[in-house]
Length: 162
Image (tube, rainbow, N blue to C red; front, top):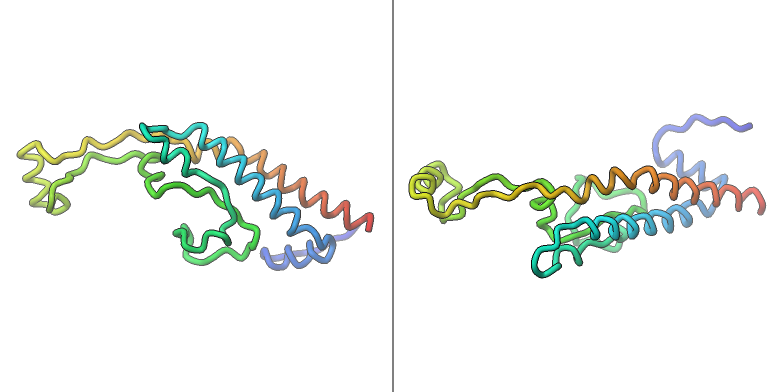
């Protein structure tokens, strides 16, 4: 039996690559497959609208192949095989909903809000939340973890044989 104390992702990946050289290759494949599976599930639960444009825009892909997409975090990921779910920019408005707000010019100011409220025109009623991304991800998370763990185990078994 082997024991090791590891601190940080880099140390873990160095150690895994020593034990099983193909671990990153297999986990990258598993993560991409999991992202595609998750995108399909999210797409099936997404609000459709008249044109289906939003629903059809949902896809899973490698983060490295989408450098122009906006990042959620401040720094780029260190994982070359990191994947994500990509959709039209207004996914957050559908997922979380919007509050009633003014749509008239200058409606974002205090005076504009007072004038819009007094006239009753130019107010958007807001939209209810239509959660479809995060509930789907939370439900699929254990399955995704099993897929990645199976890929790691496959690489370790392959390294033991060879």
